[in-house]
Length: 117
Length: 291
Image (cartoon, rainbow over all chains, first blue to last red; front, top):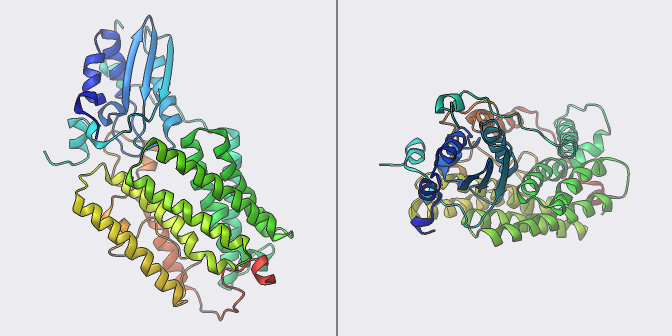
């Protein structure tokens, strides 16, 4: 179980330091995991989102290394971000370290998945 | 970012997924195996169709487990791993399907299956290096089942002897996938223990069915859903997700409607007329017939 301080849901709040990054995160919330029906940000699948001079660097994971959706999600993320004004280049990296765990789910995702409050 | 609002972002339509021609070709081979398997199964039921009926009937078990399911499952893992060598597994099983049916040496098909099983297990060793979660161990145990089945086939044993090992592959693969999804729910230690007990009980029940030589459909039709009471699938989630604006492929992937086909197959089998079988008919291939 990873340290809560390193969970993406919390880290993203720190990373989104300007309007560009907030817009990127909002765009990433439109990308839905097709198996779970929940967006990538609330699932905790976004490990990093940095925007610098129109260059967006996104670090993603999947809920398990055996999941074949990495390429699909990357395509969806790239499409979502490329259409944002001010974003000229998108670089996406799919990583599996640290391994995703349910501790990375946001409160919103937990509610959607029926977790008890 | 001026002018960009949450509303405009949400209004956009997701990109259409693109599937490479290479992956489509692999899937086409899997489709050929599925079609050949169904023709073989119909022949066994007394409804012969076109094609080499005897060969299709004799090879239908391996066509389903290796030519179709083996190809689809290993293709999924190869895509997940993202390494070129991983695609050797689905290509090999894809080619094994036609090799099982055409008039040629059986060693070609069994060798292709052997290559696929080794590559498949190698992929799982890498997956375990990334994450040693329980669901990956369960699926890796399925990969070992595939390797055992391969060893039996390579040793010249009839396919019937490899049925249990093939069932281990399919049951544990599906069970592991369900267990992975179950993490999205609150999986208590008690439920985890129940899962493992149910997985063991399910395999044990399957062994009993196989041993009693009842009319198990094909190679046992391991259930991706419609699980028997007490089996892993009965306590783990199926297609219950899809709660947030899922549509298109998202809706398809999370549709609970996908879960009904194994039950339909079983019921169809029960409706079929009983036919006496010769010992060589059951799960036999050309190699086993010759041995």
